[in-house]
Figure (cartoon, rainbow, N blue to C red):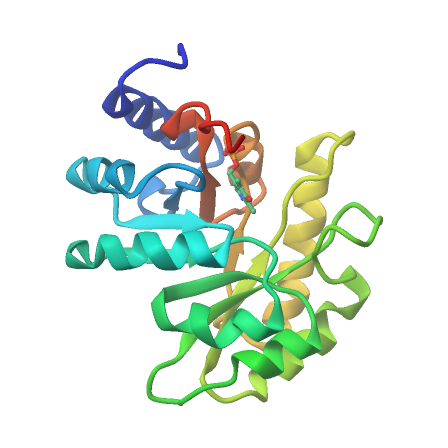
Length: 227
Ligand SMILES: *Cc1c(COP(=O)(O)O)cnc(C)c1O
């Protein structure tokens, strides 16, 4: 698919690819949530996506996400925060995000605490690379961190999230995430979601149980230059 194919065509192509991968995995495509990651693109693109039926959108920087959520508030979209999050921005992100996919440390869990009547969904981000620094909790720490989320008001543990590391076959990495998801579910049976799979590896993620796919460039086209 060429980079300038119209948006509707790219969206349809990805959705067909998702459906194919689901069938190959013996899964129902209807149980998968496709999040379109719109980072670096203007709010006008979010509006075009919404007109094509997209409901779930993702962003990785707070200021950009907050502005776009405000500009498109009339569309009642579900915003997913997928990027590294500083604790001092956590409360602000809660206000517009339906889900935060990148909870990876105690200080962030604590900063996200909020009113019980208005919970935000959280995924524990797991580092699958074994090279700390780019975000994500050590897999060995996941169950302890899950317990901390379970003990914190106003946040709901819904599952685990990861990015496939460079230099490894993505399916092998996603298989580790799936095993970890099972451990977390033994503590929190409802935390059964797996946020995994991007433009280049969503089929492998679906084969390993992903429920939430975070897809950017394959749908939006090349990201505009940030200069
Ligand atoms: C940008 C981003 C994506 C989407 O990446 P593409 O390769 O463009 O599909 C998914 N997850 C996270 C955390 C991202 O930052």
